[in-house]
Length: 142
Image (cartoon, rainbow, N blue to C red; front, side, top):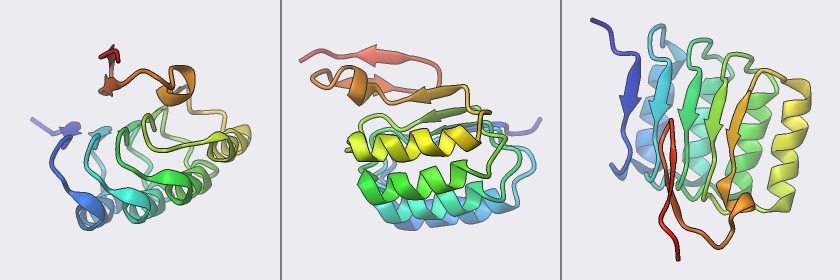
């Protein structure tokens, strides 16, 4: 049996943990789904993961929802999306992403038409709190 899905949500891995995961992703030949929601990785953790995405040609689903990556982190992810043509689903919900950051993602996707699912729930329902996982969105209401 091989591990193809890893869910590390709610583990407070922060930027240092994200760096270790990113290091492992560079050599990954099996893992296709990585769920890192609610881990406070911030912009630095997003940068580590984005750098790994430039080299990883196996991962197809990445959940970075609720990680406080903000504007700088989104820019790192957007830059990685320009070259990663394997990732097909990306969750960036509830990450303090505004209009400018959304444009970075949109511009990156212009050169990478492979991503078919992009979750930015905060834009669609800004006043609604939600819990996301790799396959569903559960609205918790206000």
